[in-house]
Length: 234
Image (cartoon, rainbow, N blue to C red; front, side):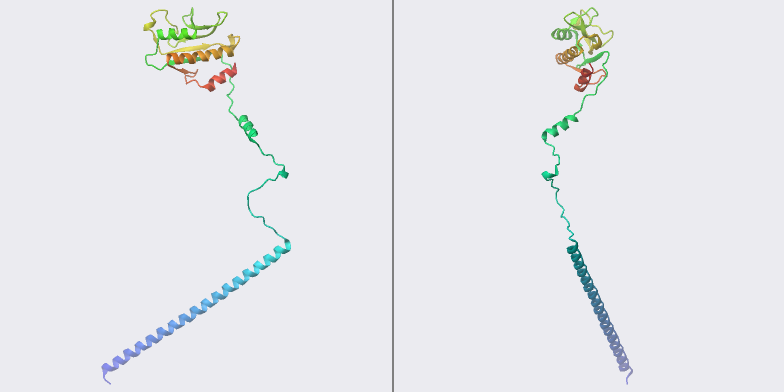
């Protein structure tokens, strides 16, 4: 036999053997996969059967013991439960109970507030005299303005913010001051509350006439809460 033909025969024989081996391996893998799938199907079927059996057992036990599970839902209060239901009047009373109450403070020996000019030039003397006359304040012997009662006794006074605190009796057109100070002594008064109300009203009226800002005793803007707290202490 020619050597070239022999080599071709050997190569062909080798190819046939390789093809047979690959085919045999493929068929073997397919068979193993089918067996594995069959086993998993059996396990699933067994699990379903067990679950069904368990459910049947639970159902049987439930029917024997008459177990009832109440569905979740909103709680309902029946009239027979005797629960107290707050009405609108009760809610209003509760709000009143928790309404803020001004803190009670000790009565100050001297109540002192200030009226500060908004203008950088301060208050002019002529404007002060005009406003004091509107408020009914009188120029006293101490060279300050005063509120006098029916017996010509001093209820409260108004001084200049700049030392020595007095107002000049002449040349008022050239006089300027940055602010004025109001002061009253509650212990020296027969009706401190009435005088205090007049005191606050006078300050507020002069604040409008003179265009000024009202400060409390701590040199802060005077608030209604501070006024109520001091009035309550009188």
